[in-house]
Amino acid sequence: MDLYEYQGKGLFARFGIPVSDGLLATSPEEARAAAEELGGQVVVKAQVLTGGRGKAGGIRLAGGPEEAESAASGILGMDIRGHLVRQVWIEKASDIAKEYYLSVTFDRGEKKPLFMLTTQGGVDIEEVAERAPEALARLHVDPLVGFQPFQARWLCFTAGVDDPDEQKQVVALVGRLYEAFVGCDAMLCEVNPLIVTPDGEVRALDSKFTVDDNALFRHPDIGEMRDLEAADPQERLAREKGVTYVKLDGEIGILGNGAGLVMSTLDVIDQVGGRPANFCDLGGGGDAQGVVDALEVITSDPQVRGILFNIFGGITRCDEVARGILEALDRMTIGLPIVVRLDGTNAEEGRTMLAEAPHETLHVEETMLSAAERVVELAGAA
Ligand code: GDP
Ligand code: MN
Image (cartoon, rainbow, N blue to C red; front, side, top):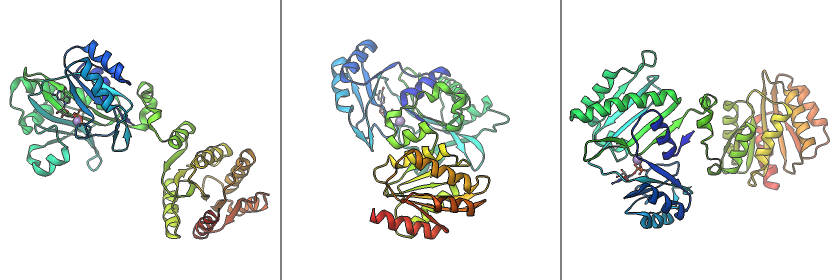
C-alpha cells in the first residue's frame, strides 16, 4: 500500500524524523485558510500516488494565502500521469541549500534491507545511479543483527556528507528511518529530497512510503489511511469482498484457483485470439460465497463479454466448486456466457453436476484450450 506524501510525513514525524508543518486542503478556500494558519511563504503540493510532481507542475511556491489559493485552484483537478489531484498539502516553505537523497528498501536478491544515500538528490535516483554510480552510497543491513549506528556513519562518509553538524543529523535520521521502516513493516521509505537549509538544518522535504499489504493487520491505523476513492471501482469492490482481482482491459473475465493457473489462463486466452478483462484468483476456496463474490466483482466490469472458470482441483474439490458455481447462479442473474473447465479431484462429478444443471449460459469443457476457444467464441457472439 502506497501512502500519500503527507501520510508518509506523518509517520516520519512519529519516528522523530524532522518534517515541515503543513495542512491538507481539498479546495482553494481551504488552501487559503491553511496558508493563513501556517503564515509566511508556503508550498502547495499535489497529493497523488506517483512521483515527479514537481516536473508535472504539481508543486508551487506561494508567497501567502492569496497565492496559495490560486496555486491550489490550478493544481486541484490536475491529471498527473493518470492520477487526478483531489487534495493538496500546504506546507511551510523551506529554504534549500542542498538536496540529498536517502532511502531504505528491500534488496530481494540479498534478502536484506538496503540503504542508499547520495548528496546528489532532488532528481530521479535512477539518473544518479546511471550518471554517477560512485556518488551513491549503498549499504545492506543484516535484519537479524539490526541496524548499527556505525553503518549510518559509513553511509555519510561514503556519500561525502562532510560537514560534522550535518553528519550528526543525517546519522540520527538514518537510524530513525530504519526504525520507521521496520516499525511500520514498510517496503520502501524514500526521502527525496532530504534537504539541508541555509542554517544547516536537515529535514525530509518529500516522502515516498510503501507498507507491506500483508502486514496491515498489525497496523490498523495505517490501513485506514487507504484512499478508497482513488482506487478503480472494481478493485475497491474486490478489496471489500476479499477477492484477489487485477483489472485488465480485454473482454474475457477469468476465474481460477491459484495465481499460476490464472496466469497461464491469460496466456491461453491470448493464444486463441481473446483478451482477458481481468485476473481473479479464488485461491484455495471455491465455496459458494467465494464464487458469488468473485462473479459479482467480474460482472461489475461492463467490458466483460464472457466468463471463463479454470479450476484445477487439488485440496479444493471440483464438485465443491461446481456446487459453488450453481449456488452462485441461483443467487444472481448473469446473462453472460460462462465456460467452465474443471480438472483434478472429483472433476468427473463436478462436470456432471454442471452439465445436468438447467442453466443455458453454462458450458462445460474438458481442456483449458477448448474452454478458452469456446469462451472467446461465445463472447464474440454475445
Ligand atoms: P516530487 O517532484 O513529486 O518528487 O516532489 P518533491 O516534494 O520532491 O518536490 C519537488 C521539488 O520541489 C523539490 O525537489 C524542491 O526543489 C521543490 N520544493 C518542494 N518543497 C519546497 C520548499 O519548501 N521550498 C523550496 N524552495 N522548494 C521546494
Ligand atoms: Mn521528491
